[in-house]
Length: 477
Image 1 (tube, rainbow, N blue to C red):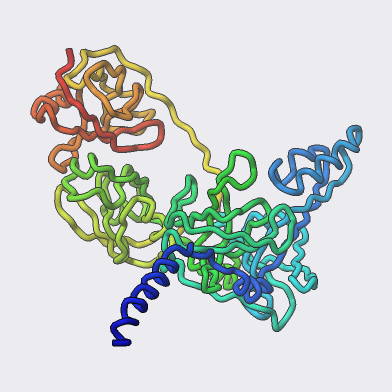
Image 2 (cartoon, rainbow, N blue to C red):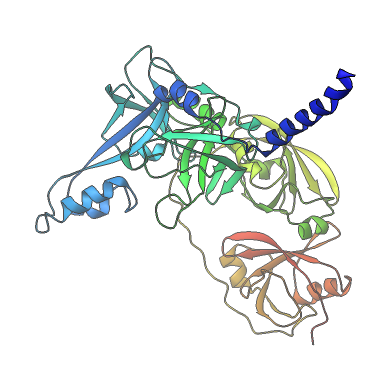
């Protein structure tokens, strides 16, 4: 009897506790333990460069967003009539200790051009550092201080990171030492313009000038990235920060420690992304791989038999899901290695062997060349394109054996990147690449194609070759 009386009461109590628990908001993570444990291995870095001569402002290694710019601005205005004065510029950054005997990782731009690099620990000790090497392509530098028994960070696996998980950054934004900020992983494998070798980790942790080179931690207290860049229109934090994955950074530091430089593979191709339309044109089941626009004559890919129009699907056993994967995979391959490369050509997969070359030291590439002189206009074809054939002189100047100049684009074609002045080199039909040798031949090829078909062209623009698709093919009127 007592049990029957208590049962409804107990059920109601359990239900009340359950509802109460559901009503409680989930608390934010506690970062205090992580910071106390890992913070001592994060260091502040200040680099000094001595600038001499009259063109003082032009020689500065920093821009208006750098914390050192304000110092220069005040100092420079005190010497308006004395441009020959020497100037000592200082920039600030962060880093973290990866070995107990003083190896430290930071960004290359933090120590670039520095005459002196000083490292300050959280216990206020200061050391003069030696730069063992720096790699501008990944923005990673390895420096060393003479010390022992130093606190060391733990390294994590950035491949296990999940978008949305919490991360913590520690550094010296605007010179405020050992500042801690937190956020989440916004994206992985982010490719940035002119950054072909780094699949960046994007976060919304507050990163500002001075955070450069500092560590990005996961919630287990492991370093998963090196804070390197921000996207900003003001010079300060706008919610878009990018970190170099720690596995990429550690491979760079391994080579820097061994030889002071980084060796990267190359095969000598220009590539582009495979869109859905391009995939259909080449007979691919889905848009994947890296589409080869042009092949360097005499380069490793050329010797291996790679042709413009090939789609590279795998390199050395690694899948190329998008074009941006290829430079990173090839770059990580040891120069001199002979590796297998899977390509897609004429609706079939095939394997080639390539001897990987080496990317030379960074240098300024001089560009040159002549622009094709327009020939007399021809009649517009069914695409609404007015084309003309290259003259013998134009072929010599452009080093081309064939091609059609786009003189004008009239109505009838839409959703295309084709421009007047482009040179059509070939048309892709049923996965095969057919050279465009004359206006008459090109127009006959068009006439044989279905009016609703998406047409893919191999086009040369300046010194670059690219594939362009044309949609909405109606008869030109």
